[in-house]
Length: 230
Image 1 (cartoon, rainbow, N blue to C red):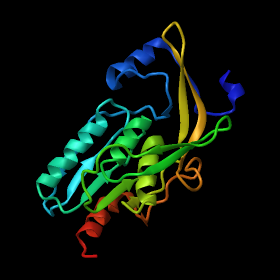
Image 2 (cartoon, rainbow, N blue to C red):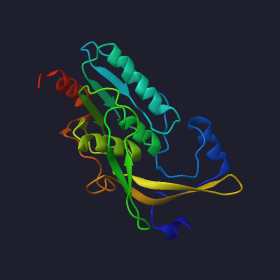
Image 3 (spheres, helix red, strand yellow):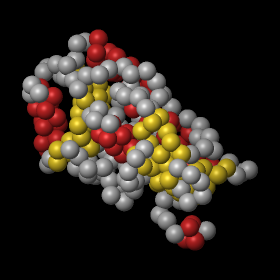
């Protein structure tokens, strides 16, 4: 069946694999998500650096409360008088559409994305929640950033809210719709692609950083950007 679909994103998920996924990231309802890679770390790290900048490592967008944890981290960094925020998405395999919308809503508002399919009109999606901070924002990306993480970075770049630093992302933003079967298994079928609210999709081309750097220089470049008077 999957050979007939003609894509390498649609997969069959047996009950045992789905149970393992759900035990880590919560139940997956039969609604649209975005495909993610296999490696799915599930904790964020944040700290106030000695130069006064806040640093947040966001390794995934799949776990149930990830957006809540990012919001809490940003709030604490603001309370600690951070002068800017570095959001590190490097290696982030993506995850849930809802988490992408909620994390974006911490920094900006408005309709930022649309999904493009061959069976319906484009569907627009907004950032969700109350803006937590207007501090300068740098986002670190690399070739291992996929799906909803690409959508998050690309949208914040397109609105002018963030400067992207690093390498071009994977260009893997297929929209996945889970179809549920009575035996507890699911078929995750690629049904469309994610795109900015205006413009071409990131599928196949990735998100292009504003400042292209060698991986070893990415964080240093972001710190220099945010500590240099504009």
